[in-house]
Amino acid sequence: MFYDYEYFKKEILKLTAIDLNCYKERQMKRRIDALIRNKGLEGYDKYIIALKERSELFDEFLSYMTINVSEFFRNPEQWEFFDREVLPYLVKKFGSHLKIWSAACSTGDEPYSLVMLLAKHIAIPQINILATDLDRQCLEKAKIGLYMEKSVENVPEEYKKKYFTKVGSNYKISDLIKSRVTFQKHDLLKDAYPRDCHLVLCRNVLIYFTEDTKDELFRRFYQCLTPGGTFFIGSTEQIMDYKEIGYQRMNSFFYQR
Image (cartoon, rainbow, N blue to C red; front, side, top):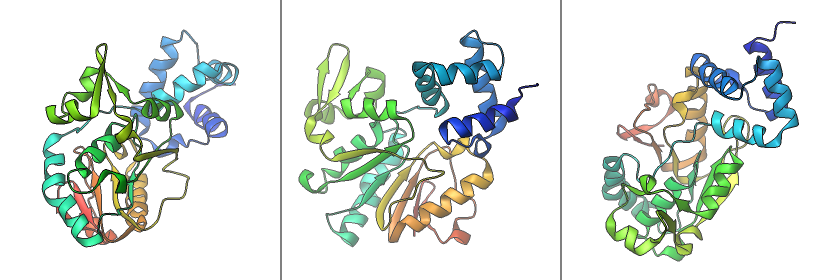
């Protein structure tokens, strides 16, 4: 039997409930082929067997496949606009008890960045953020809240002093900030979305999906926003048919329902 990439996608769907057909095939196949070679395995069938038999290999595959690249205040100019224009608008329109979802949050850099900024506009005890990701390992790292120096390069010095503790060469975020974020496992392709959100962030993730999948997800994010709610996307993304979906564009990376 010839075990090709189509076979691999079907087996992964059964094994993980992740549909690789939703990802850009050339890009994802290249990543997976490299991973298999690095493990010294020959062929998709041998790799599938190894994933079933070795839990550490299975966890590694999930982390590798979900493409976790994250850092605090990634693309600082976007966060500056967010702080200057978007947050004051949200607080004025909806008050201080905002319903916020950070989707595909990776290791927590994004929701923790958000808490620090929100604390300029809202009392910290009133801040509550739902942060989700497909990768359990990332969520566990996020709950620990320990980051390498590179991850905090864009954090303003005042925040580093106020909200971080140096641990060797790493930085540990304060329990005060951590307490405002609830982490949960969530699959953007399969699981139900929160409803009536005032703010949703999903940044630098959808670029890995096919155009049809991206369009479907942009529509699902629209539906989970309350009227007037804001959707914050990444610097590598754009919503081509935002008017057709119903969004109003604030600038290149912020859209309102």
